[in-house]
Length: 256
Image 1: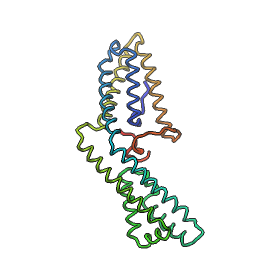
Image 2: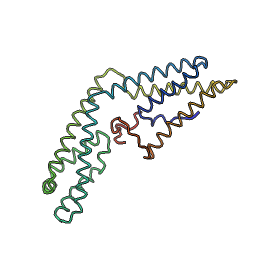
Image 3: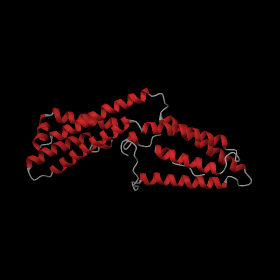
Image 4: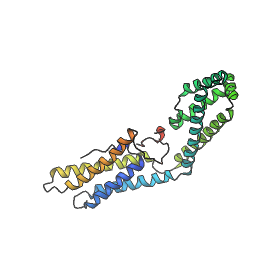
């Protein structure tokens, strides 16, 4: 049987994959194939994951985080791009001032906006602090007329961190088992079902499991191709999850 790249499936993909597996298994009447207990367990684990996933996606704080993260990312990327452009300015004073700023950005990473949430927050804080505390850097930014832009990045980063801590508190106060554990339980249940199908197919003399296995293999291939396309950067699929997570920040990379 084909092996799914299941650890690379996003939560939304994993839920859809499990739902498809359940639908296929149901069409083959799992009770007659002695797979009812395993199929029911997968349904139960998938349902539990789905409920918690929808609850998390519906969090108002999560939605705010997406907006604040986009705001600070746009602020940083826009500012960095302008400074890089001005570093080629014909006016020597403007050029030198911009070069001073871009060198500071390089110290903390030109792709700060791609870091995970905590790393981005910390690096932006440190970068802005250096701009504000270093008289030469402060003067350089002021001479270019971009102090207000720096203040916008600072404000967006501050607002993001406030809501991020609020989400941490929200999650800590929640009695529900968190998504990573429920995800792993669903995966374990799926693997147990596949192990039973494979074992029963091995001892079956009438080929009763061949059709089921063939359909599941096709399904696995379809989802694996999705992961491979994404890893190669050739897909055009937009995932509504954070950062997006996680490319994007590792906070929102495959939630395993």
